[in-house]
Image (cartoon, rainbow, N blue to C red; front, side):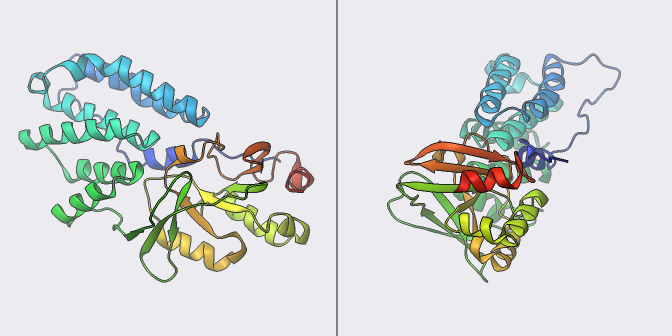
Length: 300
């Protein structure tokens, strides 16, 4: 049976970090317009996860704008405590789904309001930390863990920055140290194979093991670039373990998905064959669409 990658792999994992309990203080009260908007928005975001990445981001942006533009124009002091928390959750859902900075800015503005009301909880701080990681705002993520050292979040690794980064870049996990290196990626000018994978995705794990066990596939993919999607987690241990076990398929994480315009879907695993920077073949899933021979033929 053909198993295809779930387009929502990273998004579903990120959204699972968010609580789903209802914030309505009075169950007998009629829902506010913000509650009604959120009741539409939350399942909508999860549904959009099945769309291609760029369509998903546009759909979330449009839905967020349409449902909450009135509330965002309203003075925050006129919003109830429960509604302020729901607005924060909507921004967090959007930030973790897309990694776009505009939603993180909304989260910070709303967090200040929750702090002023003294209704903020460690959960909101943890959500902002994960959104910062997703949006690659590492400075603010460090500020949060410094200000709130007891937060139940993944620790910030040390991140070294390479100079003069233009175009695609990656976060490379340093072996045996809790450290990342942000560096440019130089793709082959004539021909390049890019494999989108994730060390926590069992389809990706199945794929790399099968490729290594197949001499023809291993040879065809010997110079492939393995890259993971931009995400809200570092998972340093998982990357280190993958790279120890699969030295011919060393995996780094994309700094920003938008730096890789040739990749239209970050579902894992997906195989892209580029000729002079243009995608000439795309094979999705594991087992791959068309089977092993289709992948070998595209790689050849």
